[in-house]
Image (spheres, rainbow, N blue to C red):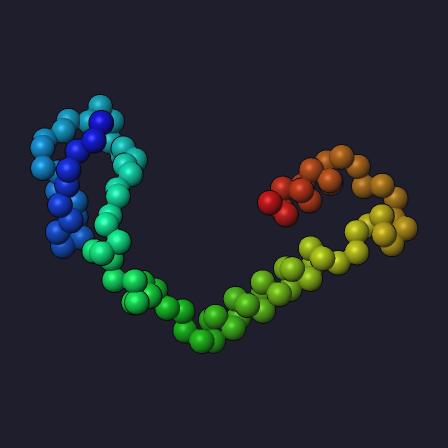
Length: 90
C-alpha cells in the first residue's frame, strides 16, 4: 500500500487515515534528495571521543588480523571456536 504523508516538525502526517492492525508498524519513506540538507552532518562526535573510538577500532582490527591459534602451533580449537570467529568477522 502506498500513502502520502507530510513531514512537519519531526512528525509524519498521513494524508489519509489508516487504521493499523498492530502498533509499531515499520514503514519505508522515500524523501526527495532536493529536500535533504546534505552539507550538514546530523551528528558530530567530540574529537576526544572520536580518537578513543578510533583507538578501539584499531585494537579490534589488530586482534582480528593477528595470528590464528593454528599459526602459532596451538591445538585445533574445534568447530565451535571457528563458528564464533566467523560470526565476529561478519
